[in-house]
Length: 186
Image 1 (tube, rainbow, N blue to C red):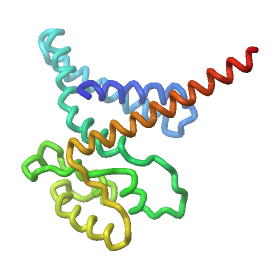
Image 2: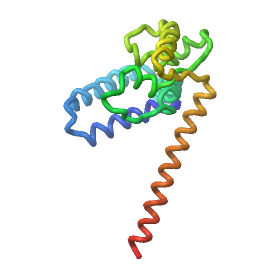
Image 3: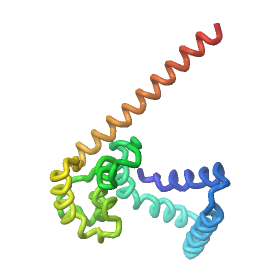
Image 4: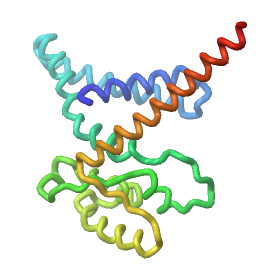
C-alpha cells in the first residue's frame, strides 16, 4: 500500500491511452503534465538526486493510510448494480463500510473511516462524520437498511474473503476455459 499511488497513476495513463475518445482527455492530460511540472519543480530545489528519490518515495508512502482506509471501506463490499430503483442511501450503505476506531485515531484516518457517511454527505466536514454516523445508523435501522461498521481486523477479514471469492471465480472460469479448450481441440 506504500506504493499504491504509483499504481493509481499508471492506471490513469493506461485509461488515457486506451480511451482516446474521452471527452475530457486533453484536460486530464494537461492536469497530469501540470502535476509533474509542479512536482519536478519542487524536486529541483533538492541538492542531490538521492534526496529527490527519497523525497519521491516518502511523498508517495505517506499516503499509505489513505490507501489502506479506502481499500478497507470499499473492496469488501458489493459492487452489484441494482439498477435505477435502488435509492442513493441504500446504494451507499450497501457498497461501503465504516471502520470503528477510538476517537483519538480520527486524526490519522482523516475522518475517512466513516466512508459510508462520507459518501452520503460528501461535503460534510470530516470532523463531523463521527457525529453523523450515529444519525446514519439510526436512519438505517428505521428504514430497514444495513449500516456496515466493522473493526479494523473484521474489516480486513471481509476484504480478504471477497478477494478470495473473486480469485475462486477466476479459477473456475480458467478451469472451464481449459476444459472447453481440450474438447474444442479434439
